[in-house]
Length: 208
Image 1: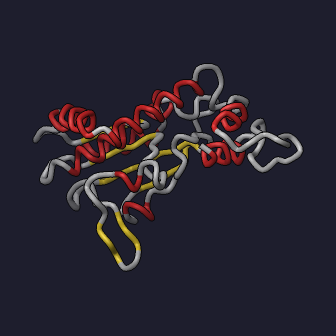
Image 2: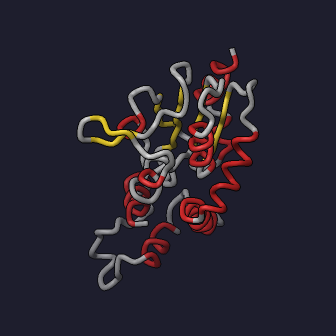
């Protein structure tokens, strides 16, 4: 939560940073303090804050409940057939999509497009992904979710604090095409991502 708070402060002047002693004197760096600060950002306006808290709970359940994880993976994996060429996944759905592709070796998908993805967040998500990482030198590297033909495009809005880590290449490999987009006041909205030119191009490239 503190990382999201700092990220929101970095991208939105309306958010008081966690180390602003003049405004947060005697206020502990607690979840409550973070939520209060985040409620002033453009991203967390209206119901966005409650939605993110709900999403965090959902991803926590997914990553810690083996039964739920297996059920969700089975449903997504079943949709990846021999004719699947493009997989598009938003937000926490990108976590399931990544694991589903890894669970289907030999799949024919040519493009993975992740938008507003939290996949790069250390500890909370990155280190809990399945399968386990491979070790290259002294740095663990997550498994590539497909064959050599798969092109992975990751798009993140600069103000999207759910997509806290914008560049996934250190964790998943230099092959990931990462770009920062600008969704205006709807930083994490799926529709804004899907209507971005880069997203459309990535999808089209996977279909040709």
